[in-house]
Length: 351
Image (cartoon, rainbow, N blue to C red):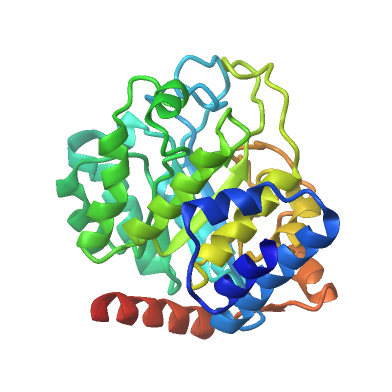
């Protein structure tokens, strides 16, 4: 049963919803190994052996939203910070000097940064763009359609906004007070004005196999150039703090299935769930991007794990590179990443 699906995917024929659901049922280790091997082979076919790296600057932990899963939800009484523009520019430069291929500028939906038609946010992007020569990803939450050309003009290359789930009912439980369609349209509006787009789902929040399959298919239909899956991590002070985390293997299966269904997409291995220990299992499952690289001792937080491996330096570019190279992976250089991004844009224009 699985052999035919693996062969079909290896030939670049994609997967149906039924086939995705079947793959998510795999429990036998030998069959799992074949799933991961197929994912790695497809990654190699489309991207070679290279692994690319994204630096992470979570520059504001203030947020107007009250997401059920998030440590930084509006009602959580926690210590927060907002980096100055000068601090953010300096951190971005440090990450570039360390060798990352992209800087990911992330914040909660901070009303101060969005005030006056996003004046401060646009200034921040412009100044980071003038200080670094690598691409910029912007993750500012959900905004109006009219805002995207402003982000593009300011210098953003990527826009990331995760739906978390494409099940409307589950979405309303995860993101109360938020509009499903408005958030879904974020990637459409970003791509419409020339930005590259990333979507992502959360694993272990009560979703079914059907929900996951729907998300994998929907991310393909929407055309997102980068797609991801991340395991839910219970956060103190949230309505979901007492939930028991699901099996770690599930995220790896979802990532591998994403690779089989969409072999030409960039798929991240995030350090924000299990830290450096979780890096290589995700690379072996078909990921070709390392995200959430954070410079140590700069008082920056992660999202799913606000402190994990950060100040110890285990999420630094230097340590990540060391781990990858010891495992036989080659860290891609900036010109190679730019070439891949250029090819993605060309393919989109010719579609």
